[in-house]
Image (cartoon, rainbow, N blue to C red):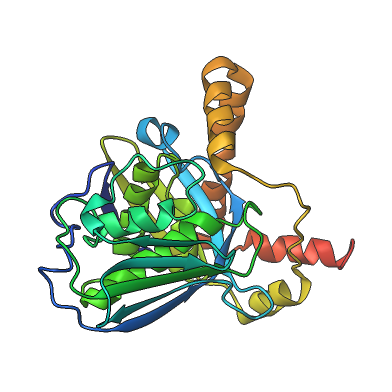
Length: 307
């Protein structure tokens, strides 16, 4: 059964007053340590229709789902506050480190090879960094990790950003609901200059399988419909689904540039993209009619080949 949910609007690319959080010097911190762990997302159909400029000019529609790998949530962030020291310290699982004495100095554009531009952008959208953030009287430490290959096409960068954003919101004790986190990550992507869309973070912070549609315009309107599937289907997916990394690294910003060039110069590609958007919508209709395409596919796969 597919449950309908209320739509919500995202202000793009600026942050509206409704979503803004104040600088951490002006809002008492509720916690001194948080840890956020998130799943990756699998794109079933409709990917790239969530990215600008397509999503600003045309309807976007993506069917995806949140999954663990080896029963683990592979992406995460730990954020802690320490009384001794000041500024912001960052580290990741690749051994990179960065120390910033004055958070007000954090400002885009960031260098393309900066391993912490994602974290810096997260600090800006949550009020911990940027010219209006104020100075820190205590030290803020941020550590991130990804137990999955970067560039594997599982939405790693955007989901890591969602983990950091959610952790920083938790420190402040403010709203950290999926729609708030997804909205801020959408803004964060534009600050970073990667031009990313909304499907990665939504695929992770909203549990299970979901169908998300966006309406074009200066304010993107998103509607997330969670899809409830049978327990038999969940078990079948867990037993039969294998995620294999081929070693071919996917750089989303490069792919997005290529796609946008093809959309403006190749009519065949444009028509194919428009047709592909019907797939998730057809899936939605089939679920309302009591037919689950994923269940049908699993029945078909069981007669062909099981891994």
